Length: 355
Image 1 (spheres, rainbow, N blue to C red):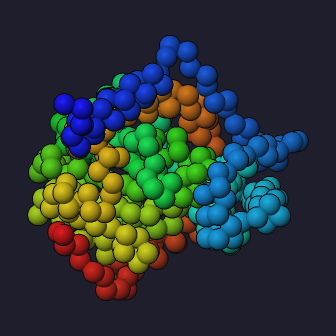
Image 2: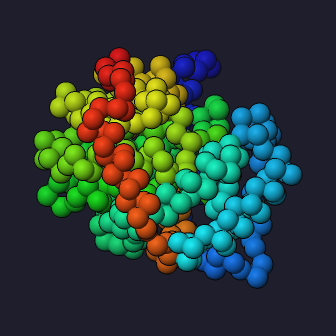
């Protein structure tokens, strides 16, 4: 019989992809990304950037308002602002780092500089979230190897990076909310400098089927408020879609409380799904780990991400040496945001419902 069934064809394609990516899996040799210069006024700026493919060039031009002239002028303006900022003592000034903020804010200098300032201040206010993003830290390595959060190897049809999370791998007897947040920062910091990520953005998919009361008990209202403040004001990433699958009813209540604190744009990009079949109507099934119906096994995705963490380790550790002096203005900003939450002035919002 010469004909090949659809299932047989899919299996052949899947096996071929697995072989392809396993060939690209980590070898013993690791070429590390060098430590960045943290001098706020270096003698020579690092202007090296990644070349954009045709799709990202179009996104940058049409949606981010980017062209070579605007990019060069904006980098110069932001660097000059950093030099003159009295609270910024040590900071990355390389083009890849600054483009995180310029592209996220579509080259609005006011918005980009404000986001950078809040990013730096959040690193000081919440060191248990942002510091020690080290793959050689035992607990961080355990969470990476367990598959708590990792980028999948293939991008979606729009060129967006897909990040997959399995909440059930975080044991509340061993880990804290801080570990979970640090894992998100670890994933982010290994991707934020990628030009395709800066232009096309992220899609996040979370499997909540393994979440327990013990895990939910780790989360305090202050944690939720602080996280909302960070996501609204300080995260240099373009979140395009956020999907939760198999969300327990109690987790849904917490999610709705969190949702009330988010800005409207992010709220409108969050979806909950009753099943993986429902998710697959929104996200290409083939991108998921093989254990969730995709082509490439979870272990291959995780091994590639672990290698990425090793490659970026010097850069990640150098972030802890950035120095920003948090002043009264940041304290008043936090109080103002808390007051908005307490008085309900955040406004009305659509509640999350299961599709």
